[in-house]
Length: 328
Image 1: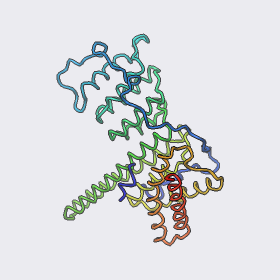
Image 2: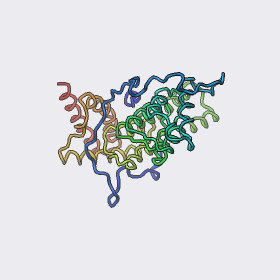
Image 3: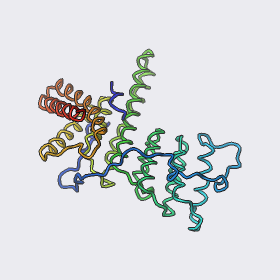
Image 4: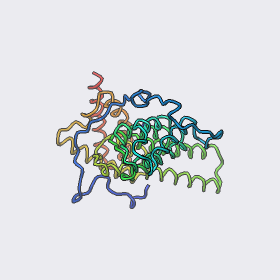
């Protein structure tokens, strides 16, 4: 059931408020220019055809494991032309980095890509919004989102330019990893007889999922580092759905209460939380949020917190009306 929510641990004492506390500098919500997800990754303007004679060809018959010939040739070309001693007139065209990103298909290649981005920046070559978008999306697609987090955590070294949409990709990748780990653990428990050794394995698998959940929240915490508002309903539902899957109920309670506070603030100011998005995006996100709201209403009801149960019930009604309005 939860897999459909995410197409997209901490102990209670380790959790902290996700929204800035009073007295600290806060990031005020502001309209954000969201890019439509319509980039053509094979567009010749972004990825020009590279002539064979312009790229250093590998003479080795055996490539490193997980490295394709095309990637290796592009990597070698950029690496040789971004050394500290490379004169400016020999540096690569800026589109070459986009080409390397496009041809990145494995975790091993992603590791080399990260090194090249750092080397690229040491030569003061630019990392544009388009390059940031392509890089983050590509690494999330090949399950290398952990590398994206490391790069975002060191702004001076990699100089990426993320926006809310890119943070959403990363958090969805982490959330999907949580679901995968939990489902794998459940499958093992159901298919094998329980024993002392297997109980230890279960504990280890659970810990892995909790660590991934930590990284999801740490990614969310990086947003103010880039002056990006954290007030996004979809991001909150991603965190909630992953936390529910892991049954981290104390964390669920904290995030859900902050979500309610956030939505109440918007309601009091008569703001439309999805006004920046297209109808298609509003429909998709409203639908994906509904199941989370139903689970929260049920959980708060079972725990005798009728106030919050009623709040989440009312939210479901509001979003069902929003979906109907879009459909009409």
